[in-house]
Length: 342
Figure 1: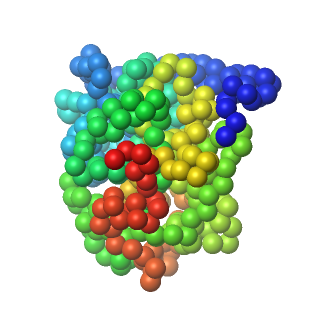
Figure 2: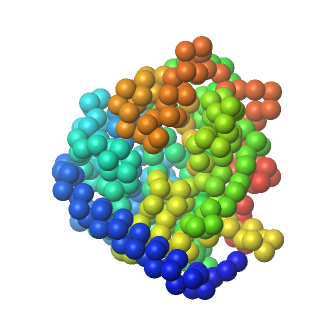
């Protein structure tokens, strides 16, 4: 792999200008965020922080918070984008949550990443920072027995500044609306199935990151054009520095070196999965809301595909689906790796 320092000068300057633009953009857009509950004074040196943008996710929040508290998150920094389901009120009462609210356009904020980049710049410096959605749950090697602190300590000792996780879409065996998801419930009591294969990987030469597509969303909604399916590659966990910026969701960052989370010399680096609990009984209502708002990427192309599929009832399970057990199963399937983390 060619080292970043040996890239042509023009390429390095281009990336540097893009990074500076994204940081400046985040600073300029901070004014739309109104602090509702600012408890950032409680953040301790060494805390692992979680950064989340949410809208109308009240039913998901109790389990989400408990899951990441158990994993070792020390403080949550939320941006609420004009929720009207009581989720902002709920978050405001949580003692380990700092909350900002905005009615500004999610789309014009680069799908919320301008807001997150600002909070990362302001509060994330020198912390390990996990950036996730309320339906994403990090699983990594030994996550059933070792807290997130054990992973970040090992990453520090290994000189690594970022940790990748493939987004793994989870779904129930029957139709999505067969079992009603209730507040506080473990979503994977219902959405216990996933595609063990059917993934394509390519490399983005400009950013250096891997691009992963496939899985149930591609086969159910984008079989006519698999390359238009959603990206599944994520780099959600980063030891943050003020010079960093997310470029496209958590799919890629700048500086480019943060995206080089794989080994091209035949070995494997440690990686995880984000179990994606999108496909529950709440999905139809959420998809209709987001389609109506048209605040998502590519004129909400993904949600238009969902809406079309939902008209005839949605069942993602197929004969090749696999029931989820634990991280060891994912490692056996090659979806995560321990690398040299014993």
